[in-house]
Image (cartoon, rainbow over all chains, first blue to last red):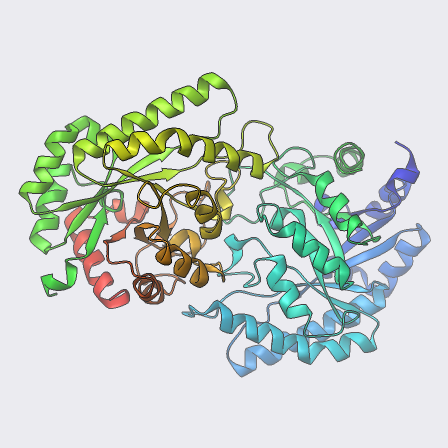
Length: 278
Length: 278
């Protein structure tokens, strides 16, 4: 592998969650990977400013912080807590030096059967948070999740819906995440990627492959690049044709990968990226 | 419960798979349910003509036979086998006296990453089978399945896609299935139901509720009516506003329901139908 090939590759730390932040920084830098995507819990445990310094010292860009969101509570107290927590996430993102906070919107409220109403509550939360995010130099990155998560994790299921919400706000304040795992099945994705690119809305581009059978709970069944059904190269070509020049972030939740040596998984991921994405 | 309320209710036998065909016929007739949806394996074991007589003797309409499909093999031999099997399913449907064969299209071929190409193979199979079906008085009912099945069970994921395929053929030969479990998340469903109704394409209307967590393999996690996130009444009102006057068929795959007394589950299903659907 030529490390020039890996300059745009970012590895989300959940892909190799067996590595500590210092291990991740060292191994990623050794390979020549350009960036990392980080998660709030390990960043808070390590300290956001210290984590920022660690990545900077290893020449790594922090391409995203995961995640804020869970905006869809109906009662006032829960809603206030969610907004406070998202402001904290924005502070952490700013301290970390990343311009992108990934948002998973949240599911239906207890007993609710109205997805459209829940999506409106997401819009209200974005309106509350967008100025705060902008002051900190962080963009809200709304992520559509696969429709299998619509009831309990994310009422925003398609790129089109995410753009419908994001476009109510200035592009520099609210963007969208294009994640192959969530969107691969949708025949409208090519046109929606073009729309997202034309409006400068693509805040992050994330990759995982789709494999079956899905595990119980369907959260931890993502496949290593090349192991599944997704035309990953086609996705990359489309986001680039739409003008996206940012990081290509691999985010795989897989107990099979977590059980292996983290440095080896990182190497394999880089190899798969060169073979199946570039 | 007033049995007039249940005249349009059909119970798919998989909902109460613990009941034999004679038990199903007897209990459904006792309740005043109007119809049943049947599956090929138990029907073949019992004999299609005998099963037809059994249901007729109990005043029950056979609203659908499940299922044909699995059209997406690439190699010639597998494709021929699939078509032969679908012709056999059409013969069975005709012997059973139902006008509706439900089709689950099939997933991607091994190593394939092209959903559009796989959908074209579905269209080719429909073209082969439509005349044969028509001669037997059976309509092919293409069922869009939830996108979580796109790779391994059904490359047709939305009602819009199912209609795009069905509309290549006369309406009396190829229709679609509107199943709440598969379609509830899709904000475009209202307009697509209207489209389906306007073209007289709604061949079957099936109900199950969406509950989480999904089980491993995501096949057997459907919820009893009223236990989940789906606006079931809203769906019924929409298909009726679109002109549909056929059966309302409850099809729930749930080990929790199968573990209970079948007659009790049937009664509960009828009660839930009255409370959450009518």
